Length: 126
Image 1 (tube, helix red, strand yellow):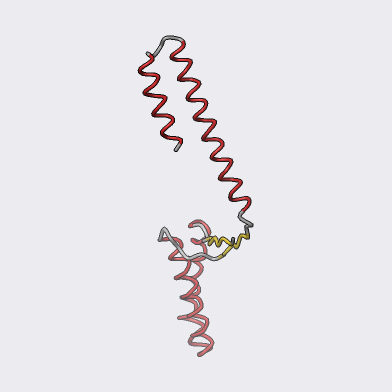
Image 2: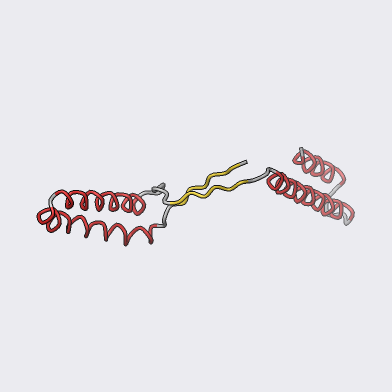
């Protein structure tokens, strides 16, 4: 089983790229294009792309990911994790039932209240 996780830079990491991109676009427009022609257009278009990418990461919630991580899984560990969660839930139910029984034994709740709550807890297990 393979999982793909995409990671985008944080806003704080994208702000310098956004500001730097604006500076490089301005340098491209006013200095590089007039002096170097075609290279200047290439320079400026790259700076525009960097500025837009960082701007999207700064101003939007979703953003543009800059990295991807692929995680290989044999499925066993995922099932083992789910089994551990289910065991914790069962222990939680056992604990609730024990507490409920002690409340009944101490006379804090009646037999009817005990049975109603016990049925409610047991129905949540399924």
